[in-house]
Image 1 (cartoon, rainbow, N blue to C red):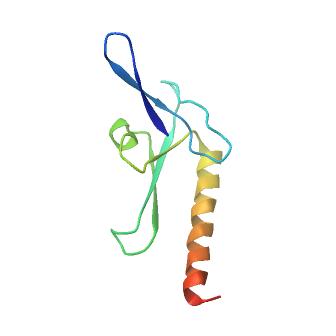
Image 2 (cartoon, one colour; image 1 turned 30 degrees about the vertical axis):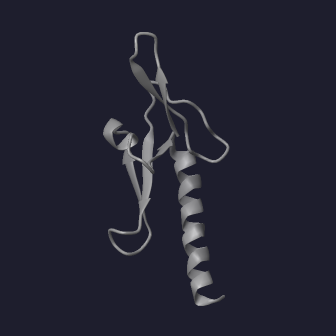
Length: 93
């Protein structure tokens, strides 16, 4: 989650919180975070993307800001579970 904070003098900074389940730590300037996002439209199937931190991608709508491997794994597991559950619902099982 990204929040823009206005400073005295009118400038703004971005504050990022980890999207991992039950995490929420705030990114500092020296952290080595990851970014995740999903897409369906590109390939017509649900796809999960993962990349190292990039400020431009971090500001895109729908991007998840992730503090490290453990939170990435939890979010990946949720994604996979949701995909499988939706596949089973479509098959009527």
